[in-house]
Image (cartoon, rainbow, N blue to C red; front, top):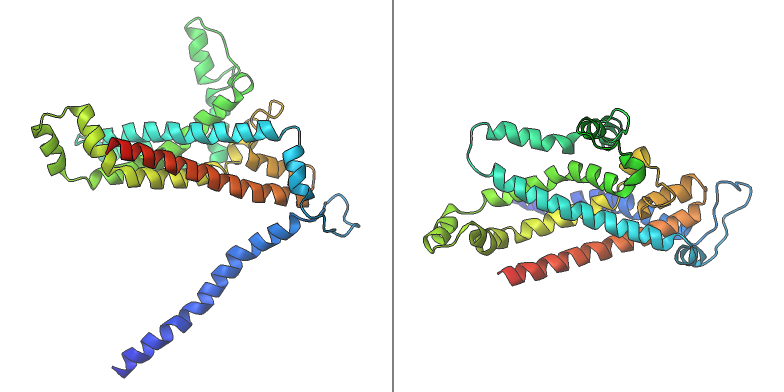
Length: 294
């Protein structure tokens, strides 16, 4: 008993070093970012010490000419990717939850896009599918008598949305599939006995059961999608003009193209706040729809 009591008393002390390390590892960069966001530190002037300029970097962001376009791009990109991956992931999860021969192999194939590196996926789509000269899509259209379309330049935002949606649909599918597997078959059988059709069963039984899973999937995917960088850098580099420049990609441009660390830090703080706002809006809409469905 004395040994167990000693171990119980020592347990909090053993956790404190790990907790302190975690706090330093996560909060120190946040504090440094907040500090740099109030300075005029610029890599192009290493001889000039960083000077405290209060909130001028934040004001520069809201007064910049491209801010409106960048914010619209970010909203359109995140909403489109999350919405499309949710719908497609739901359809795939419903299909793969049924019993059929080769289901495990089909699940493995569906997960594959999520396991490919983002830059590799972007290069594959850009050169093998979207290329107007020898891409599969343009070649198929030309064989059918249609035009050869330069997808990346003519439909730049739509092209990136397609690439990222293809990557993240398996993630949403896995979360929803786990929710479907936890659904009791007795509930579905009771709905069928009551005379409910497939659509009514989905709305009254399946969708309410998947409410929490949808919230988790949307929350996690929104946070990841708002940080997308590799696909934009590889395909369009934010162009043409700034029509595919998102808030995250603009931080890269400010830090490593214009070398303005102070302004890039302020943009990063704004990006975190904006990500929280988008996530809360998504969750509020989902909960409202879930309440109406219930």
